[in-house]
Amino acid sequence: MTSDPKILFVDYTAELGGGQLCLADIAVHLRHRCEVFLFESGPFQDLLEKEGVVVRVPKRDTASLSVRKKSNWFSYLSSIPVLLSLVASLARVASRFDLLYANTAKAVMVAVPVALVLRKPLLVHLHDIIGPDHFNRLNSWLFVGGANLAKAIVANSDASAAAYRKAGGKNRNLEVIPNGFAVERFAADVTAQSRTLRTSLGGEDKPLVGLFGRIAAWKGQKVLIEALKQLPDVNGVIVGEALFTAADQQYKRELFALAEKLGVSTQLQFEGFQTDVLPYLKAVDVVVHCSTSPEPFGRVIVEAQLAGKAVIATKGGGPSEIIDDRVTGILVSPSNSAELAGAIQELLENRKWAEQLAANGRQAAIRRFGLESVLKEWTAFINRNAPTVTKPRPVTEDGIEKREAHPAAVGRREV
Image (cartoon, rainbow, N blue to C red):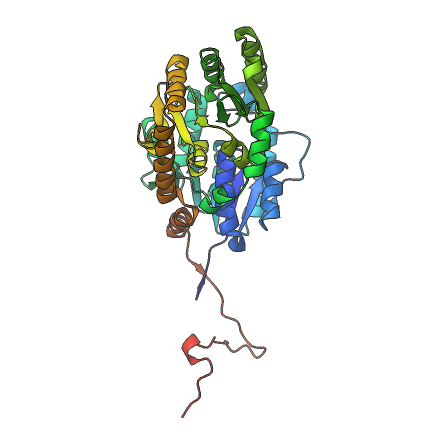
């Protein structure tokens, strides 16, 4: 007699990024047999608990793990007390589970020693493209080495999987499963909200272009600002916030300064982080994705397609797997504001073609990224790599094993 293995998901941040939204879908789906261990409290914890997922957070609340994807050895040495504390906290919780599932690079660093000591199988979810744009040599080596020790790895795109291999990844049990999306959520009627937003964003008389995602240098908000300089009759909105590092905060200040310098401040609005982006997606005419280095997946691209919007995205990485150029969207060269401006202008001048691209994109997104089918893939991946758990049979007070009746025998009478 077997039972479903109990899963402990591990993530470092309680902020809401793409990797966390992806994990939320899996954890909510498997909440009857999982918990989530987070290094800190925050909005991600609130989201999970609201959906009935049990979340564990260490009592330690005085220090956070300060290492980043480009940290040096000194940062790791100074973080040893925090790392040891996290390992000890995770080990106490993990002893009750059959399987560990590390959702981020930092989670891998803490989960690997726990999995080895407790002899628990470890799964790794790869949300990053491992390369010099995001990881220095030390962090690439640490992450790839940890992932190589895992029972299996799931990558969010072929690009992420290929980068892992190129960086020295040797785990033979590597699969690619994209993010999933609740298609029905994008059919919600938000017309009134979108009309109000469009008016407040200055798009009632001018076309409106939107860029969605956290504010960081590699996300390329700067490219949109430069493109708006070439499109004086177009307004723009940036929806997202600088979430993780001081460098992100500095980049945000640079964006304000650049908009002022180029004279496009009156064309552009920053709306910050929004828990519900659908009204904003519906309010704009075109959605742009401007990452300057390859994107591991590109959630906002799929969200925009599901919202029925024409999308312009930069070539490379996940976007090139999502978009069939000039069929389900438009692909442009990274960091090329002139090419971006030209693509925006082309869509605005050819509305019927833009509508056809949007319709094609939506159909493709529904077919490839519907949450129900993706959840089946994730669940199958986890079950294939989880240990078989034997469930003890219940016994009566006299110690005799109590067998459950076969379903076919329920209500049957002997003759």
